[in-house]
Image (tube, rainbow, N blue to C red; front, side):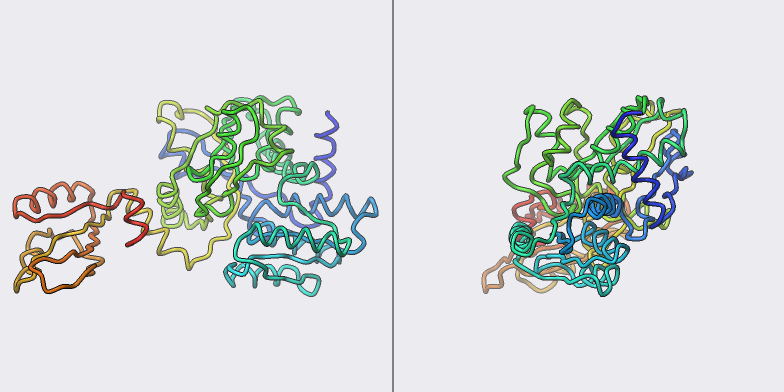
Length: 418
């Protein structure tokens, strides 16, 4: 056993004081759908509904044992790291300060306070995470409180690797023939899991899943060095990281960029809705990343295989559900948006409605510019039960002489109007 694997084993044993190992569950629905044996490692079932509690616990456990951090701990996070940090502070009876952006949803603030109780103070600073992080660093320097990083530290990586320690015990010798799908944000989980399994003599196939809008690992592997992204789409907030962590990349740099699957955000939403409606499993966007990567493999490549999927978190804010459903419908081709050149005459709306089929529904109708001219621009959202219906509608619109533009996939226009 390597020194890393031994340390992970010690962390895993200590972690049992907080919660039992998370289950590895075979999912019948996904297994039948793919032809593979799909096993879900349910990190959404930890006390804080994500794996982040593991790294925070290991970091603080080792710091306290070394006599470091007597003045308390501090972190910057608007999500799962904050909640794991708060839970662990209460467990150890140590004071902690959590810096969050002012724009953090109240639900996340309340949950962090709930997990930390009297041991946690939440400070809201800045509109963006970078401002919040710098404030936390300044507080740590001025107060001698110890900063607990979200992913970029060896002790954090060791803590996240306890996922793999449990997994190896749960699956046994079958691990070597398995394909392991891992989500990637800052890289702490992926680094820990791959290092532990490789050091333990297992040789599974690893596949990494990143959002299309935040491909920090893929870009870095392609370049052969860490690359900081100029722009990041924050929709998958738990994995929207501009630069892979330094320590995680040391452990991931020998993988190929071809092992990274870039997950479209709208397709990810369809996976989240599918798991909610079919299985009753609530997942946050980052928690569904690895699951969605199943869609990138042809069925012949999955048939008969054992696929292990790390389900990393389920802290979903249901106020986001309308947006997630909207994105899912657009991905599945069941909802589209058009700008029509609408004649300003009596009966024009009736003529338009007569072109719709029994399964077509108007979800939005909005004049973009009202005037006394003969025509006006109208934004129309249409939803249907079968994506093929839009081809029929297109032919009807064309035959009736309507002038229109499909803006569903035009990100620039859609972001301004929808």
